[in-house]
Image (tube, rainbow, N blue to C red):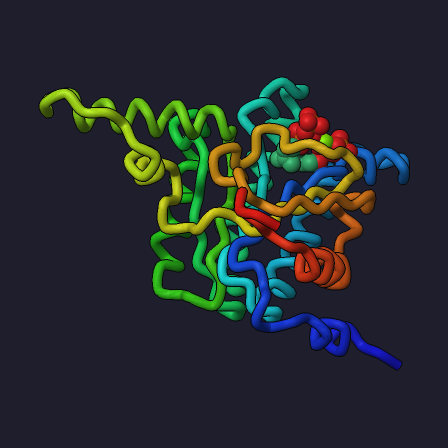
Length: 244
Ligand code: IPE
Ligand code: IPE
Ligand code: MG
């Protein structure tokens, strides 16, 4: 019988995506199908995220960006927003053993100032406390929007350059002001839950990302789903605008 590990072995190690971004969608529908509250879907979504982080590290993915809460998700019912943010804060605090066992270094991207103080302090604590781990770099995109990131980057650049002699912003100049300039652009962006759109995720960075869409709802995701996405990535030809 083939095991999960066997299927990972059929991945080509030389052609792994370096940075994978995931739009973890479908928590609400997963709960609805089971006649549960939407919030239960988010709780289960955390378990799926942990499974996928462990698998990503075992496969050899260096950078993983997880879209957890968007700048547009504030439109949802107050209760759901409060639940998601509390869940994020609690998991940041309580998963320390998980980070240690899996050598996970955590990063945050998104508009930190728009988050409640407890979420901000948990993010600050956990990013500092995991600084020495290098098994996998995990970016939690919380209160993240691609347009907001670009706007903050431009404003950050202007703030630093308004005393200097007139100069123009360049592509590399802007990149340096994005939330995580140390992360390479994502090679692969995955979206679970059936919708085929980016929903404001990594707009600048996704210029040449390969996109993979899966109908499976996020709480159902396992390492096999990640492996299937990476296998699909591995047979694609990337041209970056060059001739075929
Ligand atoms: C993704 O699942 C999680 C967040 C956006 C926080 P959803 O909550 O969007 O689930 P669906 O798309 O409504 O099923
Ligand atoms: C994208 O999912 C945001 C996250 C997964 C955090 P949404 O559920 O917010 O996306 P839309 O509204 O369907 O585009
Ligand atoms: Mg959704």
